[in-house]
Length: 72
Image 1 (cartoon, rainbow, N blue to C red):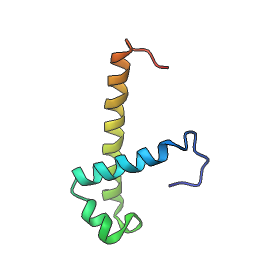
Image 2 (cartoon, rainbow, N blue to C red):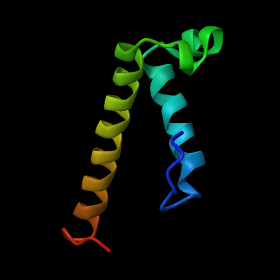
Image 3 (tube, rainbow, N blue to C red):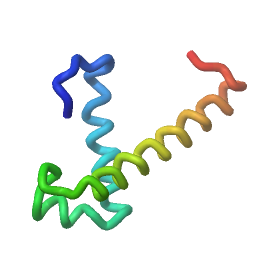
């Protein structure tokens, strides 16, 4: 992860978990175990990140729908 100060440090574990979940869905989890994230191609890492964002947007939309469009 980056060296920037985290706004929500507790979320880091959840984001790592989501990253692993998405990598598994994209069938990239074996590549990560063999090569590690640092040796993945930009395309592979971008695919994982892009799909993470899609999942987070879906989650946020669902939360907003349940709260009548309001954000806490």
